[in-house]
Image 1 (cartoon, rainbow, N blue to C red):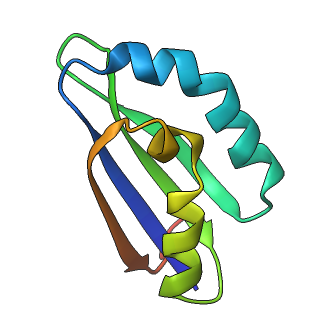
Image 2 (image 1 turned 180 degrees about the horizontal axis):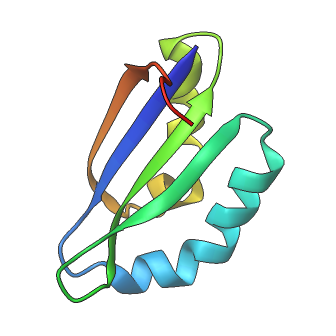
Length: 90
């Protein structure tokens, strides 16, 4: 099943994101479940959150994947939502 992992960064945490980005991107590329990923941007064009579409067996696996993201481990996020998602176009 596909899940959307929707993350909002803590205020003033861009330095955590940029410092952790290489490990985060390596995780996305190596785990084998990511279908699409990218940052949300604020009004100044700076990264302020993430959207990752993953395909895993169930919500428990999606939660485990999100918890192991280097960004999550670094304490970047103020909020993380995980929603079942159905691809219709694309």
